[in-house]
Amino acid sequence: MSAPDFFQQDHAAIEAGLEKLLPADSTPPASIHTAMRYSVFAGGKRIRPILCYESAKLFGADPAGAIPVGCALEFIHTYSLIHDDLPALDNDDLRRGKPTNHKVFGEAVAILAGDALLTLAFQTLANAAIEPARRVRVISEIASAAGTVNGMVGGQVADIEAEKKAADAAMLEYIHRSKTAALICGSIVAGAIAGGAGDEDVERLRRFGGQIGWAFQVVDDILDVSESSASLGKTAGKDQAQQKATYPALYGLEKSRAIAAELETKALRELDFYGERGTRLRQVAQFLVARRN
Ligand code: GRG
Image 1 (tube, rainbow, N blue to C red):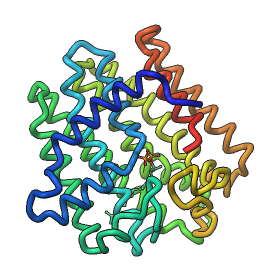
Image 2 (image 1 turned 90 degrees about the vertical axis):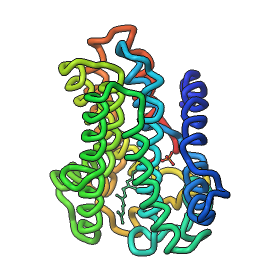
Image 3 (image 1 turned 30 degrees about the horizontal axis):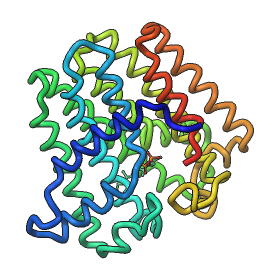
């Protein structure tokens, strides 16, 4: 499935935001800024910022306020990829179709580039043109999604600890919902808050985000088995080699595809409330499940 047409417009708005927010390569110390830019502009799909922006557009406030929020999410996501690829974690050579950050800049700069992107994310959020009380809620949601309690870092810890152990269904669900779904869900919720959503809408989109984020990681597991490294832009077959806890490992490919489809259906049901207005978010969700990389 190719990306919906509006992706290109959203993508352009996000790229312009990222370009503006990142210090130039030449800003001293140049090595760290070059390393940060290298990974941010290595060709990611920008799923999280697009979800954030489209979620904001469902409500009344100027959606331009969601662009820096989306950029901050992309900084956090990119930091997690840089750190995930380090020898101490996944030890990978290829990311977004290019040599990983530490392969180009060395481990010390790669660690610091990840740290710097995480820091820049919160500086960006603090300065975003959003009504102050909403801005604080956005910061709290994103910090929580990236954190240790049911968040990205917590999920990554559980993922590492589950290697070479037979994870059961409950542990697998916890890993996927924390490691990956939390930040995707946080992107949707943060966008909604920035866009002026009321509490009921925020909770409806939280349910949508939880399901679609979970489906996203189930699909990621499937693609690791079914696609080539060239198509993924990262090393394929890595999960099995590292004996990771994945849906195909626990359920097989066919059942994993059925689980992803069921999660997608549940997610889309939450958008019924918005009727036509929800079309774009619906299309992003369908793309996340049908994607090939
Ligand atoms: C703090 C030392 C330290 C490490 C952090 C938290 C963490 C390590 C890693 C996060 C876990 C992680 C990398 C989850 C994978 C999520 C995932 C499916 C990434 C791929 O996302 P896409 O497909 O990638 O959106 P692109 O390249 O398109 O942006």
